Amino acid sequence: QVQLVESGGGLVQPGGSLRLSCAASGIIFRLYVMDWYRQAPGKQREFVASITTSGGNTNYADSVKGRFTISRDNAKNAVYLQMSSVKPEDTAVYYCHAEHSTWASRDYWGQGTQVTVSS
Image (cartoon, rainbow, N blue to C red; front, side, top):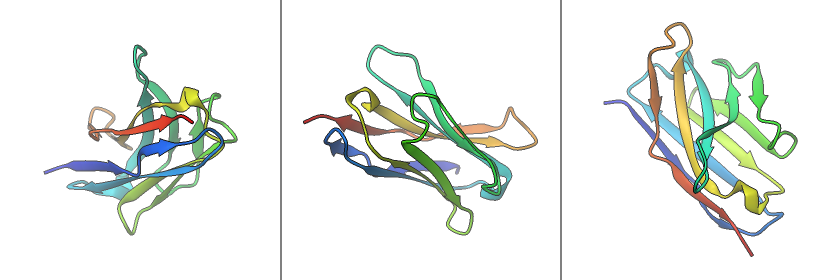
């Protein structure tokens, strides 16, 4: 069974930091590009960050560039999102996404983890 399980969400104050984790199982993790997406209330799901299979390249949405860092540990089958200098606008459900590097139609989503930025 394929599973992507996010963790680390919760309540954080504006300006604070939070680290999200996504643990994958049931896939050959090193063959998948990993992404983070988020969806705020009343908004469409939006791209946040991506990282290539070996971690050599990353990409970020303009809204989070310079504040968030995506990383992965293939030995642990995990991808992370380090969120710093968070803003209330970052409040959303954050989803982990896996895309097969050579078969784009093969992809999986996690269940999401809630991040709330509020004082």
